[in-house]
Every structure is written in structure tokens, then in C-alpha cells.
Amino acid sequence: MYTAEALRKGLRTSRFGSKIYTFDTIDSTNNCARALAGCWADEGTVIIAEQQTAGRGRLGRSWLANPNENLTFSIILRPKMAPEAINLLPLSVSVAVALAVEQVTGLRLECKWPNDLLVNNKKVAGILLEGSFSKNTIDWIVIGIGINVNQTVFPTDLTPKATSLKLATNKDIDRTVLFRSVLESLERYYRSGNDSGFQSILPDWIARTTMIDKTISVMENGTVVSGTVKGLSRDGGLILRTEHSDRTFFAGDVTILGT
Ligand code: BT5
Image 1 (tube, rainbow, N blue to C red):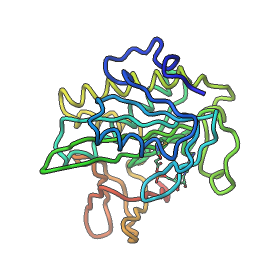
Image 2: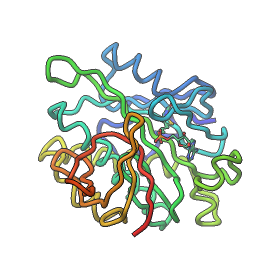
Image 3: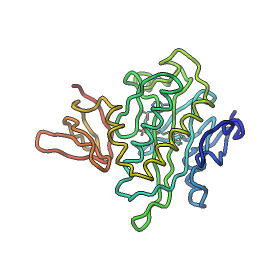
């Protein structure tokens, strides 16, 4: 069980984590963060739980994580960016989390568009961005982050596609140390995005993906489109060269088919 004091001890951030709400069990840390964000909770407020009874991914999918073994938390942001650029934010979060995990474990994480982090081609972390927008402004954003840390057994249907930091390193990872490192990295990337534009994340994200020039299929709203990945657009979309033209996707599920 976490305590806010233990998580904050030695945390080298200025705003991120200045308020941390810890829960033993909650439905979803994103639900709690959304409710707090709507009540003007401070930017950088963190909600972290040992166990989620309704942890979720995108499009109503579930995020499944054993208690006492993983990191599942959400953070409230109020970014200074145009809503059209919002797709850059999960890319920035992906790179920030990858770097922090790398510093703590020595593993190299790979970014898979739009919101996955992989180790050895298996998903080790997922990011869920939810927000409230009004009149071309962003009221608030909640970023939910799930990292498979010390879990070694996954439900059967996840076994072929999920892994954890412990499975990849054969070592127990200190979740508190990792949490602090992730929060510090998140704040660094977020500040730099706010100060000089989130576009600056594009080269960093590209450097951490093996998707470029791969043949993939993207499923968007029930339609599947196949093609070759050509890169990212200035606003974080995925550029796919199909048989007929180049298309840019801003949402969807990617399956990597080959080189
Ligand atoms: C995501 O969605 O990957 C975003 C996951 C975000 C989870 C965090 S935990 C804290 C916060 N509170 C929440 O309620 N959520 C956030 P998506 O790309 O839709 O992927 C979901 C899919 O990943 C599922 O349908 C499963 O196939 C797979 N999956 C579920 N649990 C997994 C796990 N622990 N490891 C790897 N894959 C998993």
C-alpha cells in the first residue's frame, strides 16, 4: 500500500505530485482524476491506486493489473496548447515514461503509436488521455498511465502480448523509485512542451519507434486500412502510405504486419 508521504519523499519536481491521493482500491484513477479536474484541482495532482476495479483503456477496453505489483496512476494537466495539437501530448508522455523506465531498469522501451510502450514487442505500459475542451481551449487533461512492473503472470488472452519490467529484467523493480522517476521525467517533458511547443517531441518519439517503413494495418471506426508507415505529421498523426495515397490517422489500433 502506498502512502503519499513515501511517494513524495525525495521527489524532484516542482508541481507534479505536489498533491498525491492514494487509494487501496478504486474503480479507475482516471475517473477520480476527471472528477477532481472538473473541480479545479491543481495541475500536477496525482491519483494512484493499488487496485482498480474498472481500470480502462481506450474505447471502453479494460486495463488489467494485479494489486501490489504494478503502477496505475493518473495526473491532471492543463496544457498550454491548441486542442488540434492534443495528439502530441500522448507522444510526449510515452517518451517521458520510456526514458524514466530506461533510467531505472536499463531496458530500452519502444514507442508504438498511438499510446503503447513495448519491450521485446510486447506491451509493458499503456497511456490513456481524456480531456475536457471548450471553445477551442483545453480545460483539463487527465493522463492515465499503467505500467506492468513486477507482475509475472497475465490472464491467458494477454499472455502473448503483455510483459512486465520484471519479466524483461528478471529483477524486482522498486515501484516507488520508478514512480518518482516517471513523474520527474513527465514534468521535464511537459515543461519543455509548454515552453517551446510539443512538436519538439516528434524526433524523440521517432527515435524510439521501429514502426517507420513497416507494413501495418490501422483499424479506425471498424474500417481497416493497410499501408507503410512514413512518419508522423506535425500534429502527431500517423502518416500511412496506402496503395492509393498518403493518409494521416489521429486515432486507431495498429497491428504491425511486417517489414
Ligand atoms: C491503453 O488502452 O493501453 C491505456 C491503458 C491505461 C491504463 C491506465 S491505469 C491508470 C489509469 N486509470 C485507468 O482506468 N486507466 C489508466 P488501449 O490501447 O485501449 O489498450 C487496452 C488493451 O490492452 C486491452 O484491450 C488489452 O488487450 C490490453 N491490456 C489490458 N491490460 C493490459 C496489461 N496490463 N498489459 C498489457 N496489455 C494490457
